[in-house]
Image 1 (cartoon, rainbow, N blue to C red):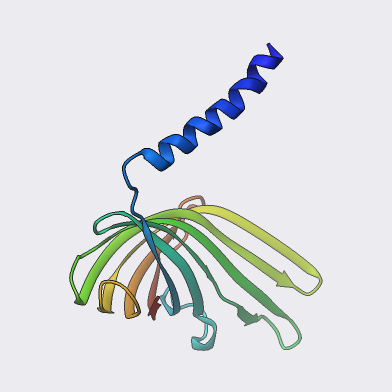
Image 2 (cartoon, rainbow, N blue to C red; image 1 turned 180 degrees about the vertical axis):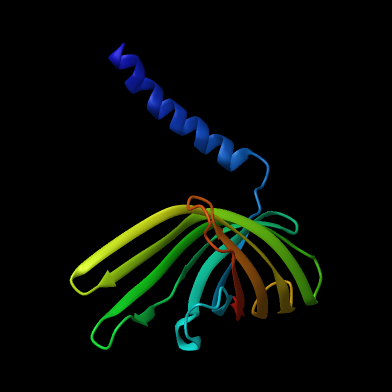
Length: 178
């Protein structure tokens, strides 16, 4: 039995390569993006502590349909007394699906994603890390050609699905697609 399994692995690899090189062409191209954003709701923190940076990529297996990922994070400091602060670093990672209108100039898009909503909190010598399931949706506009560089603006809603009573976050973002 062992020799049959050893024999099947190379055979399957050869068959996969034959299908890959002789099958129909698969066209898939990607776009990268980097964005800076501002969390405007909930507005519990000071203005200086509500920013974030985001980056990721979208890949198009079909016209106007994109699948991709987004990583976002920030760093906030809350002073709880004259001598003590809490540092919070949200670290989010989402898998996305987007629709982008197939037109040059102003190109609207909308999509949604599921992923990880996490917080790393540090208070003095203690650290706490929470990771939960979350979702987000986004809508926005790209200003530029269908391919190549473009400026983008985006409104994103984000919700932690694991914690009961967690607020819905609204984030305004602007950045570049490349």
